[in-house]
Image (cartoon, rainbow over all chains, first blue to last red; front, side, top):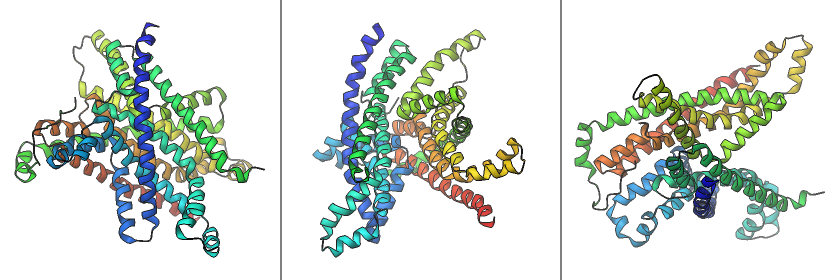
Length: 226
Length: 249
């Protein structure tokens, strides 16, 4: 009981930071990933090659290496430290974690969205063109909604992976849930109890996210309802 | 644990530093780290495959009380950050191991062997949780009719499994196992937080002691990328070999 009173407030304060990192990373990562996916299917060789290279580098190396490379590695360069904006991002653990997690998540998101875009039926695009839709209108009304609907289940997994990835921020001294949990484990020696509490918080976020996802899926699938 | 950031340095001049790094033995250390990383990765994926096969079979055969345990295990491991699982296993076992070694009169157990074993168990348990679904999915995808046909021919259950289910399942499971291998390889980097000297840890030590974090982490990234690319090729070959019999048949 005493242990819960001691650790719960700390873990919950960590929860706020975990949510902040994850939400920013997911949102920023989504837009970068969308850009990369469009670049990949754009038909331009240069853009597609860049997008493919980006995604294989970010998917082929551990998140931890990326994080350390940005946080410790880029901090070594004087022009990064001299640039106010770059240092504002890289110099702070939380912001650096958000940046790296967003870049990492963008690589996975771009693959998922690419799959979605490829599943858009040709006929729907032809119909849109026949109706005289502009490219932008066609993207906004036809391609994007169909692709998103297709990609949503896989994208949900990616969101959960990003949430789990935010725990790595603890390795650059950001005290989110895992950071607090590690500290509590080594201070109180109540390893299993602390794990159970921190794990329960993570599982709770997962459940909330899965429910939100189901609701989104249902609203996107209204046309299928009998 | 992690190197402190150096605020007093300009752009590193790698050219002149390279020879010094070579002299100090860093390339060899990186290679040693990479081989430890590979060894942990291979041992963990083997453990993961064993767990995944048992769990997948249990779920496929719907062995009632055990399916609940498997579901609990996969939900927990897949929902909780890998780092937290690693901390759990290391901190809880450290105490236990030191008690055991003290009981047997050994003062200090071999640290690196201990780290290796617990690290392998941690990563194996994580990759096992993901493998369960892959194996189950592959088993479900084996057509019912084939199994019925085997039964109609009077094959024993063991033979049906060996001759009909296992070969097809193996082929279906390879793409999924490829994904799991990729993430298992990357997860091994997390073991560095508890001090095991694999690639990531060696890079951190190098980054701290030579004050060249950019160089060391970039090299680590390249080595990980190399491992990923090579294993991608190997999996391509495995898939082609397994599918060859399919096309011929």
